Image (cartoon, rainbow, N blue to C red; front, side, top):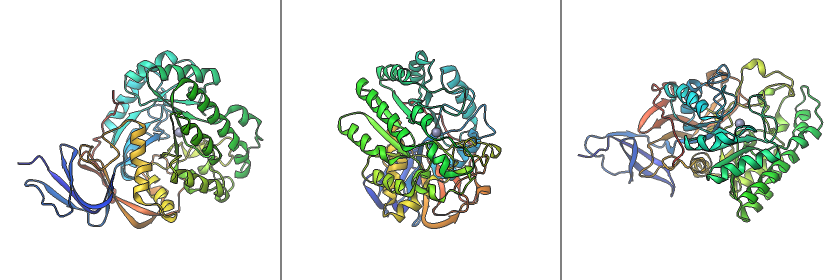
Length: 446
Ligand SMILES: [Zn+2]
């Protein structure tokens, strides 16, 4: 008698070797085998025939601001993980800031884990935070299982999470490199930002001018210099300016251990189309011009950019005022990342295999999650079932995010997530059904 209880069959399963018809056998929450499409169903197992819907590995979103506890009116583990499940995301890693407390000590991590546990519809892990005054907490956080540490080089937007200056960056990075950890960085240079015109107001062009490309370039240059000097592993968060791609590619050729992510909004939206006063499009660094977007796609295509993750960072609607200088900076997209990227990717001739690499395999690798990120024997049976040729129009009011403000409202996107599966159990379906929370807390592999 086999342990296989479930077989998922599709004419298009995205495996590490490419898309093919297959039957995926699930036992004890893991993928037991990937067999031929017409392989016999083991005795006692249930067959779920997905027809021509595509079976993908569940997405891994390593950049989510859940804000719970402390700013749960902005988002929370219940709503965020439901949105994730509805969008085909089966693993998310929470950013250390915007919650109170921030994830900057082990005690704070324990508070966050306790809050997340009963609400997690998907698996949840945590980044720690590197602050000017918590260098001595980093090792204990690393040992407690955070996936790495986030730092800002310019003001973060919340007072309890101050940025690092150059010396503090060096100190934190040396400490983290000493125990083989990873630093993930919001790279905008505060001096370049201060030197840019800060007009404020409703005009998107003025906001864009206030966060120039050279601020990213300078901060990434500084980060790469320090990573090279300390032989440290670093990751550039939410790259917006494509001008920095050659610098990053050159550093990597020199052996600097750097990875890079970008986000759906930089890859699908453009500055030219942002209406004045429409601060649902505000994020830092900002959405830039169409030509920059094209260059980011070239960076994805040639592998300079590793991952595409959401940087889902919502707030309450009242903080999204029509003044770009003072409105909360953050775009809500956790539930929409897959269709947003797939819509643009297919238009540009990319395949679902590419999308899976950017949104599942590489983010899993970034975090060292070797049981996530692929439809392959031995991995967790985490899946998204996608109808890639079906379209839908984004109705913000129908999203699972706590605050239904999104830059994607009204857009027609390709790719309907039919169902999402976590360790062999269906957790969400397109008709709005959700399983009770069954997500687990994840810790960095030791
Ligand atoms: Zn972020």
